[in-house]
Image 1 (cartoon, rainbow, N blue to C red):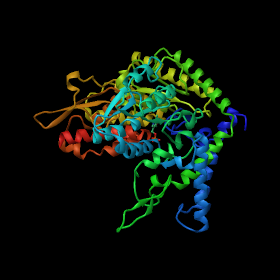
Image 2 (image 1 turned 90 degrees about the vertical axis):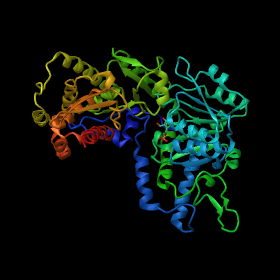
Image 3 (image 1 turned 30 degrees about the vertical axis):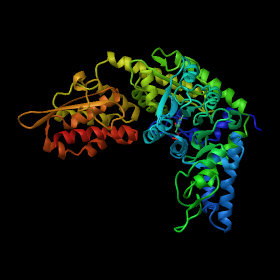
Image 4 (image 1 turned 45 degrees about the vertical axis):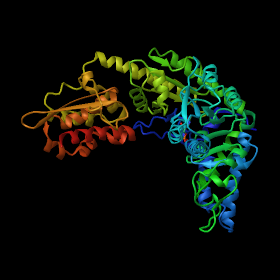
Length: 559
Ligand code: PLP
């Protein structure tokens, strides 16, 4: 086993050490979105390419040499995963596309098989949508009922309240080992024990756990444990479903087609392959699975206690540094168990902060984190998440805090300062002024600042006008648009959003359309306008789609 040395470890991740960033000043990329997916070490990247250059063939199907090599490599990864989580047998390791597909498989196969009307499924309120929606669908089909377990003050599932929910009608209990928002290790030993006492099946979502601490499924004695390769340095499109062999044997197939069959006949009943192949229909992500073995051996070569220790140091440092920023409010007041910190910035929309940080080359996550029920429970619309990996550094955290303070101070200063745009009198002139202004600022962070300043020009829309009818659907943040037409057929628009960046983008879009007739609106070349502002290439796809949604709404209102 190799000692873990942070600087050397970082060198294994080409994307992390490159200065590759969409930022025009070529600032270093600071990647703090590891909870969504981790970066890949060079051995995984190389192996992926090596597979296609040297081994590529379909698995299990042919008797030629390449297929044998591909199958051996592919099955070797299954062995690696078995050892990684200490499963009893390779038969208990089923390949899927990811955590989401693993849970869908369990819900569709086992859920349909065992659930009846009135049966209960218990979920934690903090579950990722991947561990909510498949159960909602199956509950609808079977008449089963979903019961929601709440949290204690530390952000973990409240075991006392959970115990009260469990009855002899409880058939399935689902819980994340660690929530992707709260970053606290749930009391899954107690959860599993209690579920067992009534004979309920346990499904543990390990998506956020496997990258940060070792998991022993036999010690846990859970029925199912699911996770994704891409959150632990492996390729995307590869997931694991661990299930106890006896349960998997008894479950009906999920998808059907090649590989999962034994005999297919029109005369007799079609029969199915043995485990694990019974659940693996069609050609799998062979290169991804093969390269995943490299990710596992890569991470296992280091002393895991040293990695955990470094992650804890990073977490502590980041938490304390954020704590000093006046506007920061943590979602959970306790230090997180994994290097994932979630917070809001008082008085600021989380998307605004994330977009501003992006203009400094810092990638963090904002929004509901695929945990809308949790957001509702916490009474927030979304939050920010800094999720770290052992290739992150203390210097990166310092840079994050420096940029965050800059953004917050800038915001403060700009409230005092005159707007950099003069009040735009006529709308014909508005788009020209905007184009002129944007042509003078070259870097994306300056443009981004101008967009934020523009947002201040937008009058707030009366609360009564913010409703379903005026809502712009397709925008990541909430945004509303109201139109009116005068006797000459000229349209005027009012708009608003809960995010400053969207308010700025609304000003830009309205400058193009306000005060025009329907004909002129339809004919206006909005793509060329965006092009002249150098806008779309800098916006994230979802933000870009939001802008297009504004345009679509205007066009449909004026048709
Ligand atoms: N469960 C948790 C706790 C997660 O954090 C995620 C992804 O962020 C998922 C499930 C879904 O994982 P995937 O998209 O890889 O299927």
